[in-house]
Image (cartoon, rainbow, N blue to C red; front, side):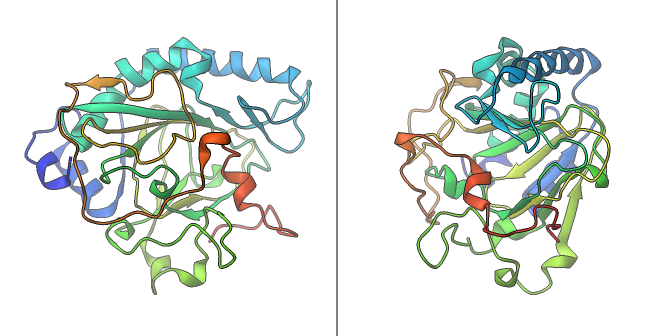
Length: 302
């Protein structure tokens, strides 16, 4: 569903002002939506996952490990597809107010696409370079968006999500380098003049939802604090938005309608979208693509 059609429907969870901000800037924080009960359940599921990772010594289809990970000091970058690995994560994605918030910006008919649980461990959680999301999973329109949930309080030191406001309305940058390698990175020298003045820090207390338009340029800085920053990310789209390529993070829930009804016709945005590599053989994960030889992992994103 295109934005003009979405805006014809009243909001159910978000204020009209926050929704307007999301469409104008490409990102927004919605506070006081997820209650203590959901946070308690999700944290318990997260703790089970972290404990299970103690037995893992290398990246696999489930875990992406942080430097220094071990049985006594578990350190994760990502749990891939948490909805696959614990029922609480799918209950949250499909039954919580997070799906209602998605309906406020995708339209009343909402489809689940994929999920991930990203961590930034204390004193070393890696940065994430500037990038667009949608070239990794292009659809027939740009309704796909991410609803992130901070499971712990997140301030500037913990490496919150950062976005360049308004960049979703600008031209799309290639996620390939000059040699044709998929890097999922935008070089800062290629950003529009004055971009530094438009960076917004998407911080929030535990239970805050962070919304990202799939076109908006975003990233995050390194976690310099002594506190972990777990961020649960669920990607939704309008029910009439259809993926062009294989889902890089597939699950049995891909394509499930979580609000409203299934579509009979597809929505098409006239703006094209760059296509990613073929993910049918598996998805390596964003950090592998962004890694640069000899790069200082402590270097800030801005």
